Structure formats: C-alpha cells, structure tokens
Image (cartoon, rainbow, N blue to C red; front, side):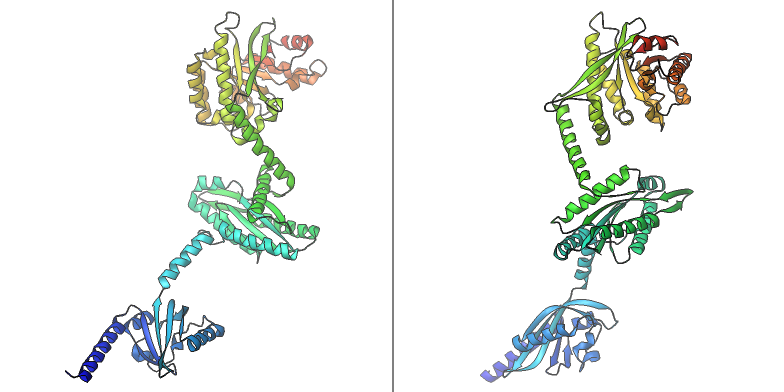
Length: 549
C-alpha cells in the first residue's frame, strides 16, 4: 500500500471515529460557521433541546436564548472567544417547548490558516443538579411551612443591617413575635390545624408589614425587621411602637375548628439597633429576652429591651449555678419551728429551709425559692428537704421525749404534680424507716385551682400510707369549702395575717375564730401561725383546740 493510500485510510478512520464520538457523546454538540449559522448538531443536542438538526440548520444559536442574560453577559463571552479562542460558563437557555434549563457550555473557536472558521459548542444539562441545589437553598434559608425566611436567612440579613446602621447612623428595630398559648391549639386540634394557624399568621404578618423583612424562625416564633428608621431615637421609637400596636391588633383574631374556638393573640419583644458594634446573635438574644418579659407580664403584650433585663438574666444565671452548687455541697439546712398545743406541749414542728451561702451568709427562702420554682430546681431541692426532714424524724424516733414529734414539709404545686413525686416520697419513707403518720405534707390553696385525676390519686395513695395533709395560709388564696370536703385534709393553718392583730382588729378576730369553728365541725385540726403573745393564743384557744407556731 502506498504512503498516500495509507494516509487516506487513516484520515477516513479518524473521521469515522470522530463522527461516532460526535453522535454518541453524552454532551450536546453544535457546530457553526464564522457567521454563527448552525451547520450540525448531534443526537444529544436534540434530546436536551427538543430541536432536530433540520429545525436549527442555518439558524443562529440565539434560537435557544431564554432572555435571562443581558447584553454585558454575551459581550464578555465574545471578548473571551475572540481574544482567547475559548469560553466556558453556566447559562440558562430555552428548550423548543419553551421550558428553561441550565447548562454548562464550552465554546471553542476553530482556526484554519490562523483565521477563525468555525465555532464548536458543547454543553451539559445540569437542570436537575440546579434543582437539587435550589431545594437545598430553600431548606437552608426558608421555613418549609410558611416559605418565609428562616433563622439562617434572618441572621445574614441582620448582619447586613447592622453593618449598614454602623455606616449610615440610621436606626433599625427587631421585633420577635410569639403566639400566646399556641400549644393549646396543637394539643386540642392537632398539629395540622396548628400549621393552618401559623400560615394564617404568616400571611397577616406579611400583609401588615409591607416591604419590611419578615422571618419565621421556628414553631410559633416570627421576627420582623424594620429598616431605615429615623436617626432621632424618640422618632424611631414612636414609629416602632406604632408598628408594634398595629401588629398586636392585626394578629388578634379568632380561629375556629372542630367545635373549638381559640382567640389568637401574640406577645412581642423589641430591640432597637443604633450604631453599636453588636452581633446579630446579640440583638436576637435581646429581643428574645424582651419577649420573655412580655409573656411573663401577662401575654398579649409587648416589651422593649433594656439593660436591666440583661442584669436580671445575669443574676438568674448566677443564682441557678449557685443553687446547683449549693445542693451538691450541702449548703442547704433545715431549721424546725415548733408547734405547741394550748398546754404548751410540743406536738411537732415545721421544717424551714435555709441556705448557708459561703459568701452571702444565711439566705432566707423568700430570696431563692421563687426562682427555684421558676427554673424547675424546686424538684431536686424539694426532694432534698423531704429527705432531710425524714432523716430527722428517724433520729427523733429513737428518743423517748421526741418520738411522737411530727414534721410538716412544704410542698409546692410544681413538686406535687411532678410525675416522680409519689415514687420519691415512697422511696424516702422506706429508706429512712419512719412512721408515715408523723409526716405532714403542707400544701397551699393554689394547688387546687386545677384539680386533676393525678392530684387525687397521689393524695389517696399517700393518705393510705398514713401521711397527713395540711392546708397552709388558709383564707388568703382561693379558699373553698368544696375542696375541704372533697380532699381529706387533716390540718388547717390560719395565716399569720389574721393572727397578727386579732387583739386589736375585730374583723381579723372574727375571721380567725370562724375558721377554727368551721375546721372543728369538719373534723380538722387547726394550727395558728405567727402567735407572739399569750393574749393572742388565749383568744384563739377560746374558739377551740389549736396548735400554735
């Protein structure tokens, strides 16, 4: 075979291979002349665009244009092609059916004798990938229920606003919004109905706020950012308050479903942004703290953040830490206030908790028990008190002169309703080996506001064990003869506010005497708190048998 024939055969073979690659390539390929008229396209081009070769032959590739890209975009493409002979980038084009798709396009300028003669374009459809990316973006930056920006988006937006405020000295405001008692809707109607309420709130928020930024952080918590407020604090404050009142009004509505009607209201916490160098997280924490204060003050309310709130929070954080440390290191001790009968014989006592703080000295329970209630630490603290009181009963049981002493232990409503309360009491009684009849659990009237089956069950089981119950501060709260009859109470304690002035105040004397007479008719024993004089004791004793503290 001659050299010329061999070269011709090799050239034909290369052409066949190139043609095969051209037709079987997974990339779409189109070839144009120097005038950008399409000469040829492959099979993949047709599969992606919907256009056959006959449809596009002689046409300009702009037949695929979606109109998405502007003139500067294409100008930059052509500058690259003419100077470098190559361009590659992401482009949005249009199929024959009108639908848009995203492709990665590479264009190469083909030269003959140093001059461009053709252009070859190859592209890959990445629409599915872009769709997945868009889905990820939506899940990352938007709440899937309301499609409002989520906390991630909010943090980014807020960071931008903080920078802008620092540069321009303009003001902005953040409003945190939380639905009041939203849990009741979910618990009563189910989460599907709760979601409907959240969507309605989202629509009302967007409608009310206009162009202002609205986010749905999570659950029933929303956030509004008011931008470009006046530099003057008083004017900005007035504008924010106007919007807050508007939100309060527009987000108050009735929602009815399944024979239930709920009145929707919101609580709001607000903080203003000036030129301070604070982070987005700092400002969000401020609004959340203000929101907490709004809910604490009765809901359907709003509060502006102030530095005192942060000081209070810091104090609570420190107090919680010190309470936990104190319980762990035996800083809490019990003192016992004796209860004597009218013959001045000791019949028992009430256990009173004190905190022997290593720095602050002895701390009164009024200074830490309310916070223990609020934080939930009353549960472990109450267990500590009960255990120590029962250990003291055990010690007294071994002495002839004290073996008949009873101990009354104060138990809060939160403790009593805790699911572990009954097992804990049973366990402590068994561990300390005390006579249960010498243990008195002292309750307040607030426990009986919401009476449940669990309350009755717990009281019955403890009564069956021999434990007694005392009703503390009777006459100062929700006094009701019905629960005295319904619950097997053993003792009534007359609050010291009635006792203190009974020798000089006829009204208080009459109330105290009436309580004693009523209690005895119901078969209850009576304890009078705060007796300081013999005259007070004798006056009450004349109405019936009592014990005094």
